[in-house]
Image 1: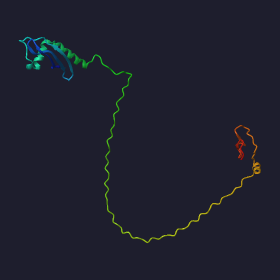
Image 2 (image 1 turned 90 degrees about the vertical axis):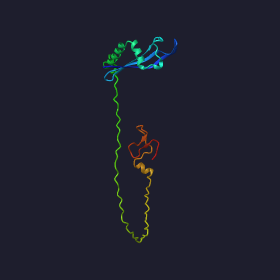
Image 3 (image 1 turned 135 degrees about the vertical axis):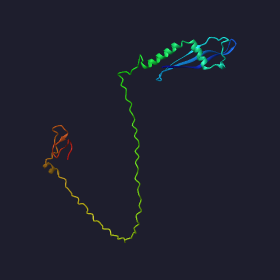
Length: 199
């Protein structure tokens, strides 16, 4: 079942017309339909009134909403308006055209925020017990004579550098040549060294 409700939200008036004052010229109205499930549809419009005769004129100060709605019902096609609103309500249950999300656009699921509640831990109550005060007996202080430590000086070992003759006898070649072009002479011997250097 659909309930229809009329309401007037504005009246446009002529301050003076044909010796009459505050003559209603235009009615601004709303017609709302609502079914038993609370689904609504609304239609609003304005209706211009013809100039009234002095005999049929109603003073503005005595007008009520019921009187003005009566003017609308006697001049408008109420059956058509109600049928239009009823169709709008039915369309909300079975819309002929709907807008669907694009199939190639993936909707992200909302991330629910997890709120961690603070953990209240009770701290243990420490029981303070007074310990008995023990009597301190001072003992005589014995001082020991410091013992002087004897540090032995390290003995330095003196090594003599070999002479050139001894080095040549041991395989050293002062005029060695770089045979493989790596910048070194006497490769893989203990006398290996860069070119043009002497041991």
